[in-house]
Amino acid sequence: MCLIMDVSEILNHLGEDRHEYYNSVSPPIMQSSNFSFPSVEVLRAALKQEYEVPFYTRGYNPTVGILRKKVAALEGAEDALVFASGSAAIAAGVMSVVEKGDHVISVAKPYSWTDKLLNKFLLRYGVETTMIDGTDIENFENAIKENTKLIVLESPNSLTFEMQDLAAVAALAKSKGIITICDNSYCTPLFQKPISMGIDLVAHSASKYLGGHSDLVAGVLCGTKARIDKILDAEFMTLGGIIGVQDAWLMIRGLRTLRIRVERSAATAKKVVRFLEGHPKIEKVHYPFLESNPQYELAKRQMENCGGMFSIVLKTEEETGVERFCDSLNRFLLACSWGGHESLLFPMCALDDSKNYQHNGVPRNLVRLYVGLEEPQELIADLEHALKQI
Ligand SMILES: *Cc1c(COP(=O)(O)O)cnc(C)c1O
Image 1 (cartoon, rainbow, N blue to C red):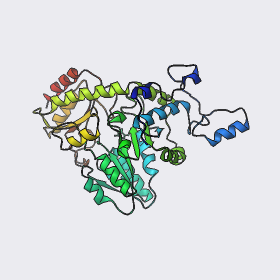
Image 2 (cartoon, rainbow, N blue to C red):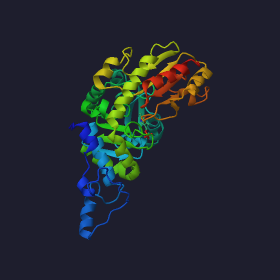
Image 3 (cartoon, helix red, strand yellow):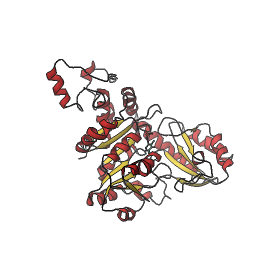
Image 4 (cartoon, rainbow, N blue to C red):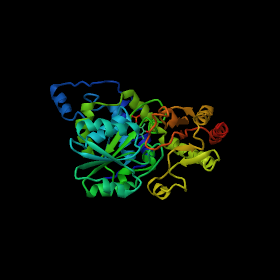
């Protein structure tokens, strides 16, 4: 079921029962691990619904409850859980589906810790993963085995931005009884709604656009009420990777401006990409909404807009040239992560020494850029200056 609601109503009002807390406009940070009861009878009743009423904060906290409602509504999902990190959310979603002896299909080049979850951690529990190029639906068809239970998607990925046809993969998976999970951090629910395309579980690193201020680490997982209930009662409660109450409040505050932040980041990134495309010092720009992108049609079909992150391959293999470029940028901070107010860059050559380097064919002279809320001209001037240093 897809519950589409007005975005401003979700961000400003949904889940906020203001009459319960003095009609405060901003919700309280309910900084309490536990909640007390007037009698055994009331306590017993609360225990029966410990995931819906204040009892113990791992299961339910009123501040986190507001956040769950907002996030679920944004994704058009029946329910959502909020975790201590995006990685905790993805791990809980994946682990809720697989058992010993099962097989997983994952798109190549997923987020690095998703890769490690699938190809290292889960191997210890007898779950095997096949990594495929997700740009072609045939690769999914060919990888399906008798014991395939889950398909892990990330559209686009956050290095070279390849996409998957989410509706086609979801339809294929459904026909075989396979569950699908999609990391939707890049697009946010404003620009892409995987659940409306038939995807079962949608995960986010809320440390990125949803939080939006580089001041918290959190994750979310959305799905049907039945599926989320099952995860809540198993992976969520046992692994216990819950968000702290103060971070939940910060995330609610971050969400207030989600739409203007993401739209602004996207619009500025378009201008920056237009400047970089075809620049003589740049070999290639990886960005879903480039007309020269072979997946441009797909991007336009399934994404309402494009996120503000992309990557460039510099026209030099000489490492010192790449480093001079990166070190010369002033407006882009040299840091991991993305999705905040500030523009960032991350060069692949920082990952390993050249002799150990092997990152799924992603070249060492690739630099990822994230565009924040600065003025486009400032960012372009900064890049123009840095490109001259190559
Ligand atoms: C950052 C990130 C994650 C992991 O999220 P954390 O909040 O850092 O645990 C997962 N997927 C994508 C696409 C990311 O960018």
